[in-house]
Amino acid sequence: MPCTVDVPLLFKQGVKVDGTLEPWANDPFDHLEGQKMRNKGCAIASAGMVLRAYGIDTDPDGKPVDPGTLNKFLRTQPGGFLNDGNMSWREVLEFGTLSGGTLDLKIFTDEYDVNVLNEELCNGNPVILQVDGPNGTHFVVVDGQTVVNGVNTHTIKDPGYAETTLLAYGNTAKSMRIYRPEEDPGYLIFVVTGDADFLITDPLGRQEGLDPDTGGSVFGIPNATFGSDSVGDDDPQNGGFPTNPSLSFDTVEPLVGVYQIDLHGLSGTEFRLEIVSYATAGGVNDIRHEVGTIEAGKVITFTYNYRGDLAVEANFEVGELETIAALNGFEIEGTFTLGEGNNGIDLLTESVTLSIDTLHLTTPAGSFELVAGTFEFEGEIRGVELEIEITPLGNDSFAFDADGEDANLSELVNPVDVQLTIGDDFAKTSVIGDLD
Image (cartoon, rainbow, N blue to C red; front, side, top):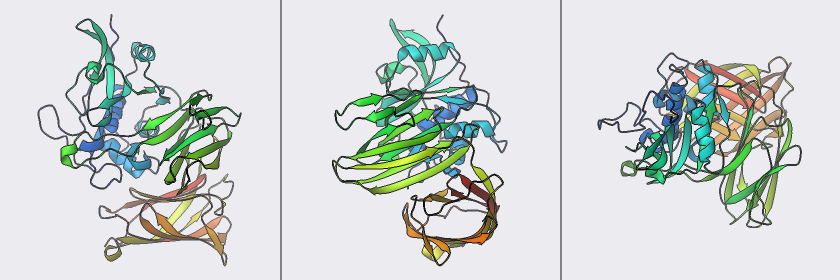
C-alpha cells in the first residue's frame, strides 16, 4: 500500500483553483519593495499546509492558520526572514509553538533522497521539497506515494501552480524540509549573501561548507547542512523577481561553544552575514548581522559563541515614539532594565537590533563607540540612516534614544510593537505612538 499523509488544505500563494485570488495574495512579502505573497509565498504557503496537517489550526490571536497569518507573524519577527527574502524555516516552529503545537525541524539534506522521503511519508510526516520551478526555486508539499504510467512518483500540493505530482518537476528535488512533532533541541543558522563562500568550524573542530583549497564540499558536522537558498518568482507578470541566492548553514542541536565562520571572497563585492540562534528551550536567543567588502582570494573570519540557554528578557518602557512623514523617519526614546539572571551587556562588542513593527535594524557587532559616558552608533542599516544612543543609569538600567530617516513606516498603526535586542538580552513592549 502506498503511504499517504493527510494534508487537509491546499493553500495557494496567489490564484486559487477557481481563478480568484487568495485573501493574502497581495500582502507584502518580507520587506522587498513591490514583492507580494503571490510572487514569493510558496515557502510560506507550504509551511502553512504542514502546520494544518499537524492540527495547528489557529494562530496565537485565535485566527485561522493560513499563509496570510503566518506571513504577518514572520514579518514581525527579527528572525522571520533571512537575507533578501529567504523565509526562516526555523521561525515557523515559533509560530507553531505559540499557536499551541510542538514541532521540531529535522535539517534538510543537501541532495534529494527518495528513500528518506518515503520513510518520512510512511511515518506520517509531510515533506516540503525545494524544486526547480519554471521561474526559479519553488517549494511544494509532498503528501503521498503514487504510480503514474508505471513510474513511481509522489503526490504533491503545489501552492504556485496546478501540478499534482512530482513528475512535473522532473520527479526530483534539490532539498527537503521535514517537520516532526518532537521537542525543540535548539538551532543555529548562518546565512551569507554576496559573492563569497564559507567554511564553518564547530567547537570540536569539525567542518562544514566549501573547502577553499579543493573547491569541494565538506560535510563533517553531524545534524548540520549547508547549501544555496533562494526563492524564485511565481508570478512574474505582476512585477516579481527572484531573490538573491544565499549560502546557508543550519544545525540542529548545536554544541555549546565557539563556532568559526571563514568567508572566502570570490570577486571583491559586498557581503552580508546573518547569524540567528535559538535556545535549547525554544525561542530566539540571538540575531547578529555583519556587512562588509571582501576581496577576491581573501579570507575574513568571524566567531560566534553559542550559549544554548534562552535570552533574558528585560523590562522596557518607551516614553515616546513619533514618526516624521517629511523625513520618512522616526524618533523613539525610553528606558530598559536588564532582567533577573542576566550576564550584562557589552555594547562595544555585541550587536543591537531595534525592531519597530516589521522594521528590523541590526547594527554590526562592535559598531558602538563610548562617548562621554554614552554608547553611540551612527550609520546606514538596510537603507535607513540610523542614530542610537544608550546611556547607563546604574543598577542595570539604561536610557535609550534612536532616530531614523528613510525608513518605510507608512503601514504603521497603533499600538506599535517595539523590541530591543542586545546580545542575548532583549526587551519588548507595545506603545501608542504619535504617527504622522
